[in-house]
Image (cartoon, rainbow, N blue to C red):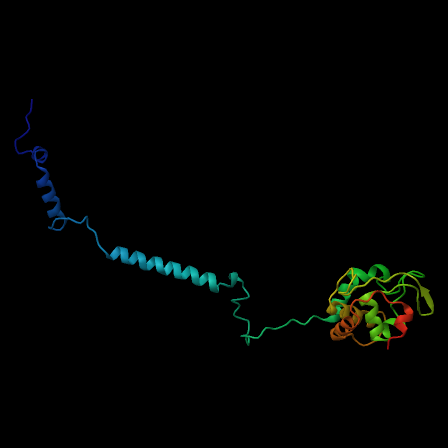
Length: 220
């Protein structure tokens, strides 16, 4: 049976006191007691600086990202003057769209209407003639018979303008566009209708009801 030698370091370590162990660790570290748990201010300062930079970067991206739209950062775009550019809509394009949305049902795609029911627009003296009469018809509507190209039609025309009793409430711009379209379609060759003219007549005849043929003929 063997016996442990008296100088066995394991036995010496087991018999060491707490103070001697702490002293040994301090010497192994840097030679001075670690009374502050190795606490330093520099890591906290760096943490606050980095947190501030992250917050600033997030705020900057939120404000100037332009919702990450490719158009905002398109390097091919020319610098603007800072003025708001109003997009001009071709009245013939807008007029054709409005005609297809409502007028085509009665007056047909070819502008010929329906015999004895809905009057034609192609070659119509009402379409290519007086601007005021044509605008008034679309603004306030028409009731009673009307003679077009020698034939009588008796279908009611609803009001399309933003007027009392109007069922469509089209803007003056839309009315001007659709009238410009029908005055230049199907062989018609009349001039365009200006939005300002539609606005003028709408304000002038505010509150009135549908027109009759006799009343329209009194207009210039």
